[in-house]
Length: 490
Image (cartoon, rainbow, N blue to C red; front, side, top):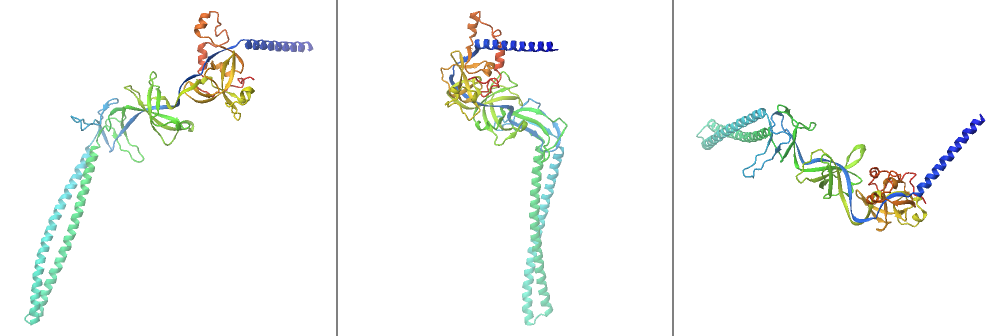
């Protein structure tokens, strides 16, 4: 038993020593063989800041055609894709608007005839009342004449009564007749006033009838729906024979079809709240529409929403409309797109490929690099750096960066235009260290002419296509952080 244990221990120790020797040999070999890297000088050029967002193509002008009366659909003359017009009465000859929908007008036509008949009856009633008023006025004139005669007779009878030539009874009879005619005249005048007031009421009723006729005629016109804009029928929802209903407060009503002006299209972008402050009306934008993958479209920011909406996961965004420059090209409404809005332009600045800009722990930077370096903020955990190629080594250089575009990052300070910056491959940049032995990767022509140059696979590197694939990961992220094994050495 003791012999077996001794053999096992001896075997384990031997394997551990062999593994250690192998790792030491490998480390020495790797230390002896410099890593192939891509280098280039920082370049002077222009840099444009962009805000990227997802968007959807929509017509700038789109109209839902709905009914304003409840009726049966009799005709739908146009189909999807047909061009329609709102008409032009000033043209020579005048252009009639396109009739999009024809509804059944039977009930509304009957309603119009009914109110027209009611209006005629009220007009006739007014004429009858006018004739009655004329008779009352003639009656008042007769009563006035009779009353005047009775008053003169009462005056004569009073004189005769005072002289004793007539009896008291005769005087009382003349006085009673005058009072009776006076009462009849007052009653006739009150009746005339009432009739005149009733005539005013009848005239108001006639005006109400006129309004009902106008309303009925207007409702009758709703049975013929014409195009409100020049455009194209993009969707037909209703069918001939279907009864459509108008919208109410709680019911949106029946949408019969949609008409849109496809000559002016918008990209409705969802711009994140962190970026919306940089977006302004009039800024230039470029877009890739998924339904047109081989084309790039330009546009201009047309409007920005003042209130936010919520997207997936409660993310806040602001709806931003971008007017596309179609130049005769056709795009499909509802297509999704990726849009870049150019928010700020920097001219003649120092820039490097964004892939070359890394982050390293401040505490892991060499003391001589991090001490008294204005580009290192010791209050922060990470510092932004690039690696320079100098005397066959990778030398870490803290930098202050500015904004980035799709491929490059602006450098404010930390490197000069004559420095050689290590820009790849990405897998090398992930784990590169300060003072690591590196070698500039030869150009393709040089590699081909050399004949004896070791192939990338043989040198431990990935083929170009694989490196390119790796380089595509986080290519545009200037602030990616290295893993725990990728810190710089001192």
